[in-house]
Length: 215
Image 1 (cartoon, rainbow, N blue to C red):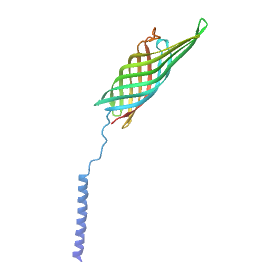
Image 2: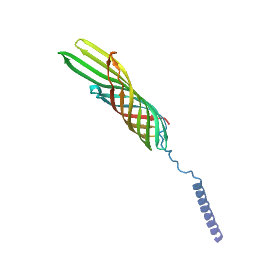
Image 3: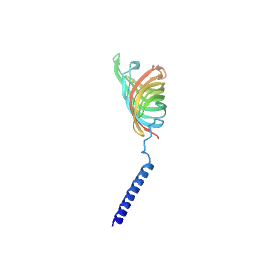
Image 4: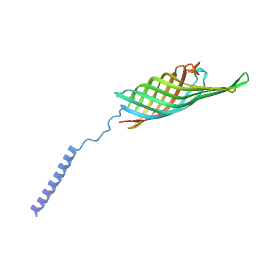
């Protein structure tokens, strides 16, 4: 009986030792935990935006909404991000003035219905938060109509100019970001009715946008 008991004890000790050895070997070859790659702004993106614009140049007090889309590409090196972006907006930045000249009633209407720009961007990224400035070329399309008594005139022109501003963009998901942006459009003079110069038209805008980041 003593020999049988000692034999059983030896078997138990061997099984326990083997179990510990297998567990230790399993721990030694277990793969390290997976870590997510660091976020990068590098890549193409496309999105939509909406906002509000206004102009007080040339005696105007025109205001209204705008909305459209944008496409662009960013390249990140360390914390620095550079890129290029193009956007276009349909707008309703308008004003109508009613009055009278020598007791003859008149109505003068102004409306900016399109804004577009092609700009460079440069900024500093703090992981998923990007602060940036932007500047480049701009285009705007304006309509003017005049009604004096029974006489009606209307015309539209394209303006060429520049744009500049800045904003903050936040990547709230791996492929999605939201932004708030201020952009100023400095549009050159154009001639309505082939004779009447508009003078320089300045338009300011605030936009909220969302982008899909292609990865």
